[in-house]
Length: 608
Image 1 (cartoon, helix red, strand yellow):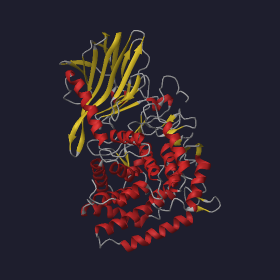
Image 2 (cartoon, rainbow, N blue to C red; image 1 turned 90 degrees about the horizontal axis):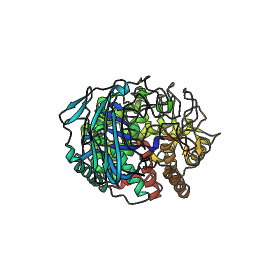
Image 3 (cartoon, helix red, strand yellow; image 1 turned 135 degrees about the horizontal axis):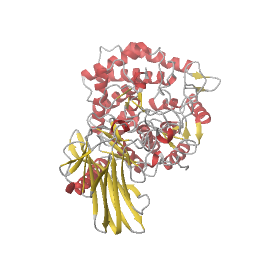
Image 4 (tube, rainbow, N blue to C red; image 1 turned 60 degrees about the horizontal axis):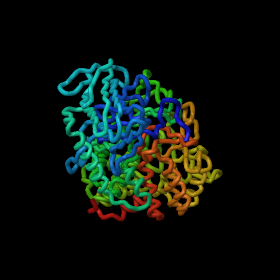
C-alpha cells in the first residue's frame, strides 16, 4: 500500500482509544495526535492529526528504538506497545480508563488518559512531551504546578507523572533514563479528580476487565466472529456515555481526497444508522445499549419536527465553520467543525427511525403510547410529503431532487408505521390512508425510478446515473434480492461505480465540488449483503474477504479507500463497521432475507 505524504501517517495506521466519553487517536510512533475535551465532540486540544505544527500533541518516545509494535489486548481498547532497540526493550499500554458502571450504563469513564512503560531489558532513555493547544490549535498554554501534578491554564488538563518534569514554553517535558525493572507512568486527566499515580496499574487492569466483560456479553460465534466482535467494540467506543448517541467517527476533516476540500466533521449522530445499529446491538447481546440508543432517538423525535438528518451527541443541532489556521491532514483544507448537512431535508431519515422503532418493538414490546404518538406524527408527515424532493442521503450540496433512495426509505417509514399501528393496537391511526400512500409510492418508484434502457434503478427521477445507496432496497424489503430488476441494478453498480473488485463509489454525478472521493466502504460491504440476498454467496464471500484484508494494522476501517487502497475519510468509521457486521451476519445465515430484520421478526418480545 502506498505511503501517505511525508510526516503524516496513513489514516488507518492510527490506534483508537475511548472511554465512551471522549476519544483519542495514537500515531504509530506513539504520539497522541487527536484528543478532544470535555467530550468527543469538544475542543481538540491535541490536533496534530490536522496540522503538524499548530496542532497540540502528547508524544512518548524511547531513544534508539523504532516505532513500537502495537496490538489491542484481546476484546479491549487497551493498546499494548513493545519497543526494542540496541540498548534494551520495553513494554507498555495506552488507554482511556474505564470501570464498570450502573446497569443502565455498564461502562463508566474515569476521564483520564493513561500511558505506562516498563523497561524489560537494558538501559533506555524515555521522553514524553505534552503540548496541548486549545481552540483547535489557536492558543498555547501556561503550565503551573498544581499540588503533585501540573495544570495547563485555560483547560481541564492535569498531568501527573513519576518522571522528572521541566517546562519549555507551552510544552511539559518528562524525561528519565530507566533500567530493567523500572517503569514510567503518565496520567493525563481531563476532569477532577484525577486518580493517584499509584493506581495506574489498577486502572489499566480494571479497564481491560471492563472491556472484556462487555465483549463477553456478545454471543455471536458465526462467520467472521473475530471481525464482528472487534467491530462491536469499536461501535461501543463510539457510543457517547451520557446519551447513548453514536458518533459517526471521532474525527473531523480527514479528507475524502488527499489535498482536496472534501473534508467534513463526523462527530455527530446520523439517523441513517438507526435501525442497523439497534438491530446489531440486540443481535450481538447488547440490549441495554440498544435501549439507550432508542431512547436517544425518541428524544430527538420529540424535539424536532421536521427531523434533521444528524444531531450532536447531546441531541442538539450544529453549525458549520472553517478553521483556516489549520493546514489539514496532508494539506487537505479547509478544516471544518460542525456540519451544514444538519440543515438539509433528508426524507430517508424518517424511514431509518421508523425501521428502528419497529425492530425495537418486535424485540422488546416496550414502546409506550407517548412514544408511538411521537413516531405516528412523523409517519403522517411522510404520508403527506413523500411527493416532494429532498437533498438525498449523500448530502449533495445542490438543489433538491426526487432521489430514489429517499423514496424507498419513505416507503419504509409508511410500511413500518402501518405495522407498528397493528402491533400496538392503535385503531385511531389512519392506516388505510397510509397503506394507499405506501402502495402509490411503491408503484411510482418502480415506474419513475427504473430506467428501462439501462435496465437498472437510477439515482433520481429523470436521471440515468446509478447510485450505490440502491443496494439497500432488498435489505429493507422494498424488493426481493433476486428480483431481476434488483439483480440488474447490482450489476450496473458494479460495472459503473466499482474502482476495484471490492471497492464501490457512492455515485459519479457532478456534486458541485472539485475533485473526486474514494470508494465508500459502507457501500462496499452493502454490496456483499445485496449479493447474499441475490443468492450469490460465493461472490459475496470473496468480496467480504477482500474488504476484511484491507483493515488497518489494528483492525480498524476508515470511511473510504482510494483505488490503490489508501485510507481516506474520517476514522474509525461507524458506518463501515456496522455494514461489516451486517454483511457477516448475512453471510452466516445465507438466507433470502436480511439476517438482522429476519432475526428481529422471529424474536419474541420478551428477548433481552
